Structures are given as structure tokens and as C-alpha cells.
Image (cartoon, rainbow, N blue to C red; front, side, top):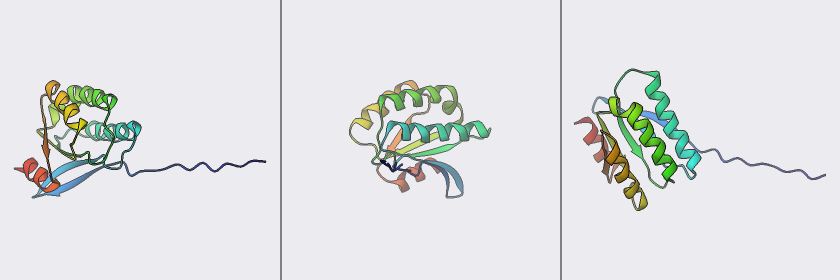
Length: 130
């Protein structure tokens, strides 16, 4: 009899809130996402936050070390047009390098509220709350 142990890797897929200079910021942490499915799960979690509330959101996305694909960007554009644009006065992103810069550029063409790119979390948060 053969027995197999299936190991599943669980990553912390996170949408949380940070308070910076007295303002609430939604923090979408993609930094542990190493698959398209994981990045889509975080994006869907963000969408659920919007659906649970009528409030507007300041958003910080951390794309450090993650996988971003055309599939993810297509879904982000879809959600952006149908939901995020109307309720997101400002969005900042960190961890944008290489091909991610090109993908973000195409995203910014089709959405109303553009993603602003920063080198540090602190700079991004300062931008969001000013």
C-alpha cells in the first residue's frame, strides 16, 4: 500500500487596513503571491471589501516579489471599471519593477483613477493621505 502526503502551501493572502496620519488605507498585500491564482484571490478579497461597504477607499498595493499576469490585469481592469474607479480617490503601488511596469501602464490607460508607483511604503502612504 502506498500512502501519499499532500502538502499544501498556504500563503498569507491579505487585505487589511493601515491607519496613517489619522486616515484609513486599504492595504492589499500581494507580496507572498507566487501564482496567478494567489494574486487573483487577493484581488477578489479587495473586491469583497468594496462590496461590503459604501465607503470610499484609499488603496496601497504591495506587488513586491509577486506574480502579475495578463489574466490578473484583465480582471483588475474589469473590477476597476465596474467598482474601484468610482470609490477610490487615490491608489498607490509599491514593488513595481520589470514587466509589472508595462502591465500597470496598460491598466492606467483604461481606468479613471491611475495607480501611482512609489519606491517605499512610507512614500506611498504619505501620497495617499495628503
